[in-house]
Length: 316
Ligand SMILES: Cc1cc2nc3c(=O)[nH]c(=O)nc-3n(C[C@H](O)[C@H](O)[C@H](O)COP(=O)(O)OP(=O)(O)OC[C@H]3O[C@@H](n4cnc5c(N)ncnc54)[C@H](O)[C@@H]3O)c2cc1C
Image 1 (cartoon, protein in one colour):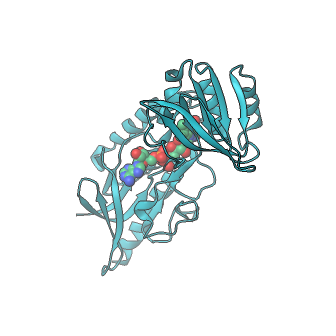
Image 2: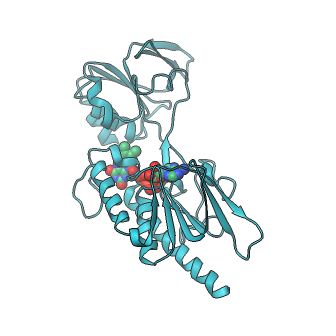
Image 3: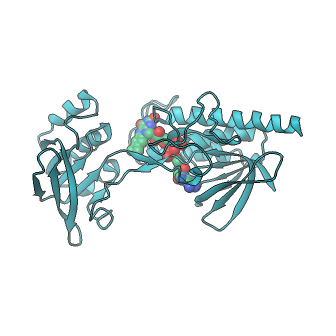
């Protein structure tokens, strides 16, 4: 079988695309690790249109319900990771082969890539070893576990500032390490953090070089990037909030990717440099990364894929 489209992912971009292609009655398979996307662990989503407030888990459930309501026109495969997308030669139009970690292969005339992004890691000794044992990538999820602990947050953007604020009701002390000489986050959020009694201050021009411990984290080493001065901090928690990396590896040999590993798209059509491959949401070079934007991009990709298929049918 050759599907009209295969959608990769279960975040807002892919779920919006799925609802639209199903209503166009395109033969579709959606393959995803899970439903919800990156904001699933957030306690406060206050900007999803039509909902004054909801949690990430509630939003994820709404996505899943809406997508599964299309099941008459949509094959859904969960708990599955796409490992590669490639193009077959020798056809009148390209056919794409999608491989999964279940050793399956599916074929489609178009692919909508909504695989989003994952947290960027520091890449220093101890980070992997103590992941979940003092190293965390989600303050919203883990803050209560750090009651009466000394913690360090890495990253001076909004994510880092908000993580530090989330930790304030629990941790005994919080420091924030930023590798440049200033914050990238909103000044109002920084002011909110400065007001917290247990906030011990920003460490500018600094980076962590090692995370140490025994069964759990017990300390970190840092370096001042300006002076070269090094030092140690006794902390039991390290929160890494240094941005995200697009999951673009699965299409890197097929489409243009920029220096940030984002898929470059034509923003009018959500099309990529490879005809038949569309991309939407945080995986793309869109400047803003938001749920509403990703959903809108997913709709654009779905409608573009639909028109592409219509044009193929007219030609054949
Ligand atoms: C903590 C946090 C809070 C946030 N809060 C907000 C907020 O309040 N408001 C807001 O608008 N935005 C918020 N965002 C940003 C928002 O979550 C993202 O912009 C949005 O989720 C991007 O959607 P996406 O569909 O492009 O990708 P993602 O949300 O990254 O979803 C990608 C999906 O693809 C799946 N996937 C990945 N790789 C593969 C693969 N190889 N094979 C199959 N499936 C795969 C993943 O499992 C996931 O289901 C927040 C982000 C974070 C991290």
